[in-house]
Image (cartoon, rainbow, N blue to C red; front, side, top):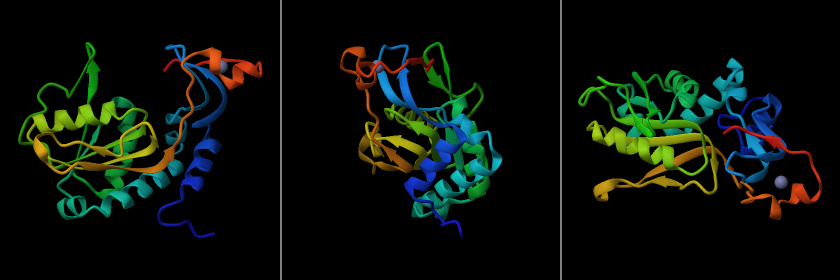
Length: 209
Ligand SMILES: [Zn+2]
């Protein structure tokens, strides 16, 4: 079978399931929340071939944005955290973009490393493996703008439906759409009392993050 240029959501989910990145069961977060599914995205990105297929698919969606295609190759690919670095490198390769940056959390605050300077950051595309709430993407967009660079695109492999479909631009600029390969309707319970898996007596797995 010829691979499609941009795989459908079902095919991407099958890839995530096969690699162990998408897991079904009964999971409990440190917050006490319960959920019947869990994403551990590095398990998909540990296989070079899978990483490449996912990144190429995402890059094809990003290329359809005129702002992105017309700025290449002078584009920065930006990850909100070290966890998104494999996605950033793979998307960079697929787009042939010039720069990669990633933010980190230090003392509870997201920031770029020291000496990442204003004026050196190209128009930016923010990428990540998974967006649960959109906070990381929005904070990163703010950091990019603080450095005087424009956010021209944003893409994630999996976007929870609780995460916004666009990044707001401060000061009245056009919002930037958050592109994704999968839109996932995540199921959450605030605690065990309402959890369907608890009611069935399914064994719990504690997840760290
Ligand atoms: Zn439960």
